[in-house]
Image (tube, rainbow, N blue to C red; front, side, top):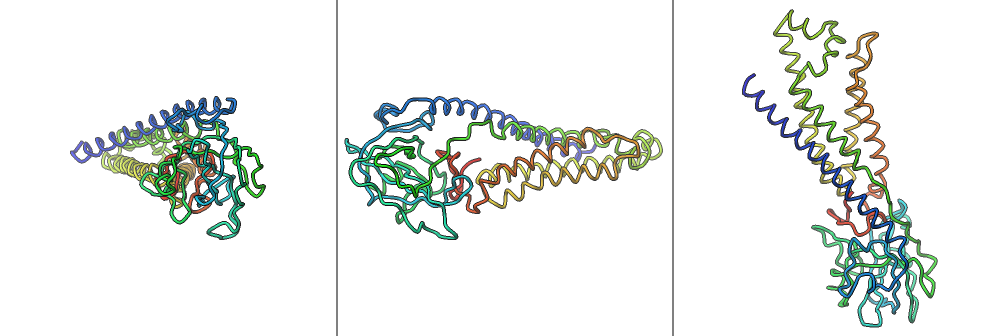
Length: 370
């Protein structure tokens, strides 16, 4: 084995190790999601309580308070109202109206009064319902401030913003705000019927387990093709040439070397393709960039193409299709299903923040982490 093959093998081992670590990372995220789901279930079942009783004197709404029902009373300050752009409820793009509620002790809480679906291509809502005059009592769900990573979407600019962030709003509005916000469930006097409500959280395990399988699958294929060459799939030679790999080697060592070289080269190509898709899925796809959703379709297309190639040219008459080829079909169906399920995050083009992602850390221009 020459130096180039040793270097290639070492590189693939590193890439395979990266794939395994990515799989383990997805399993870790699965554990985190299960733990968060338990907190969410507990908070949804908890009785309504005054906000300070829930979050304490510091006024910080944390992950442990998400979806907890709080009751607050005060007066809306319509002069400091903010219109949220690029929002999404039930796959409908639109706007949300956030109005500070001034409490009796002088502190203020950001209240998301409701959702207004976008009409046509409008950039701002045609009509924003007026706030009730006088004292109001709001019962709603607490959410932590949305964080924008490298963006400034949480800082109101010209009465609009993309995120809800207590500390960022406080800088502009000049109010002593809680670090977090409340979505209206019930209000006295009643909230304007023009507002759409918000569905509850998604309490499921998400796609993390299947993403983990994906990375383990990549690691297995890359290692098998490069380290074992044609021996990793011995039925291929028999199907295409009608001879076993041992027969090919006995007849022509040079021919065997060429075939094995091409097979290992395919493994390197697979490893590099895996690396490229890892970057796409880890960065732009997680940001919700529309092009990355389309690029991710290369995965099921590639797996389907390999399966068809094996069926048409790599399987002799009367020979059964290999398990490795069938695993490609499973992989293609799985990834295609996950992409179709995930399309709601991308459908609006600018990827508005969805209800299920409230309180998420946003890593792009208003896009939330998947």
